[in-house]
Image 1 (cartoon, rainbow, N blue to C red):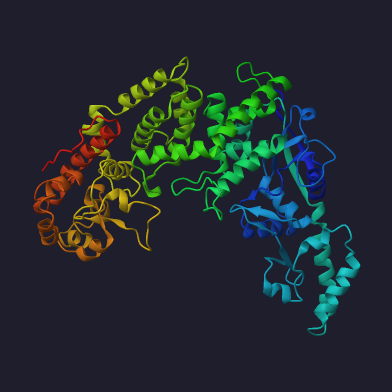
Image 2: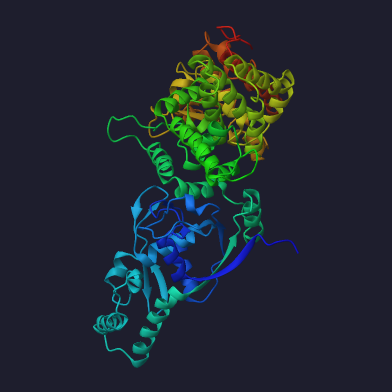
Length: 594
């Protein structure tokens, strides 16, 4: 039999909480976002009370404990020996409830996890104002594990309050103390942990997690990395979380802020950018080794190596969170035409484009405008083709490989341009893209690219003097969207024709952008009833509108299925022209095609 990479260790809840408090188990600071809802916390304690199992914990031995500071929720007497791979939310819930300490939720709001218990019904509930007033409940069970808790006095006072509602039977006087004793005894509830050896690789830890997890979940690498950062670099994690928090809300003062209407990154997304910039690596598993002192080339561990690599991560971290860099990068997205968050179909494309933008700036010294131009084209291509969907880390790993051995800014631009041209071939524009537009998906990448192209081309809204870019402005929205997708062949009209399949009715090619009040007026009229009337108003601009909105002449008289096929081809042409305008290759005045 091969050597085991783990050992089974039995704990009690009390021992686990003690080890967390002392710092022997590296549970991140309790002031980190807690993602469980209160219902799951209630169910956790209910399962324990009823003697049900609550799952096995998974720890990973810290290979170099003597080099790391202690962390956790109180002043520590020990350095962390074990890192939590699976079970962080359970342990956080147990610690917060039994110790009565506040947590910070996923929206960064500080609050108390207060559970109530009814000894007569032996039932748990989340504490509410009504429960606070009801003498049948213990409104906050954390008092049962307070160091000064006097169980005899507590039970006596509880029965006295309960007795004010009426005479208590002997059965009640017996059941209440028993239920409270059973609840207090949860501190001795048995739990099992599998402790993975420090000799296990990051890949083995992830594989072990997947194989033992009853729900078949994959290891959330980003969460695990943030846990490691709490152990080894708590300040860095705090800065990531603060940046993510501030990006979600307008600043209350006039101070610079990462807030923007396009992208509110999560801490783990920012970690990905840091790893790319620091190490030219796309897979988050590499940062495990960095934080533990592993040389990425030799696989050996050393404190010297850890310090050197940690310095690279710190430097990258500073650049990633630099507000000037952040807002300069967001201009790339606007230049690419993706001026509204609803147009962005892949946040991963945003993450990796930001990473490459930083690599171009700091590793290759590319000037501001050439950098913005090449990255705008890269983001457009990546979004249109879904480049970072499916296996994003593998794809980004391949993209970074393209840059190996390069040193000059000219080489950086040339290689990315070469890759863009290899993807966006004539066959892609003429065959692949029109076929991909034959869908009813509301999040179709081609549709988003088409709307982005209309912004690049400064196109007007269909049958309107206003510009698409103006009405897509996320900072100028009323209670309704200024621009709406409208069925050119209305739904009810198609149903009357016998076309009832929603996948045919909601084809991308059946949608156009109109002002919302025009959408209301059009209703379910056949296109031959409303289009000619509108076109009489815009006779001078009609040819350009037909071009921008990919409409053949007298489209409203066409057979519906013929119309879809024709418009898919025309939409693909507009997307191509938008991209070429972005590449400074399209002539200043767009063709006016019928």
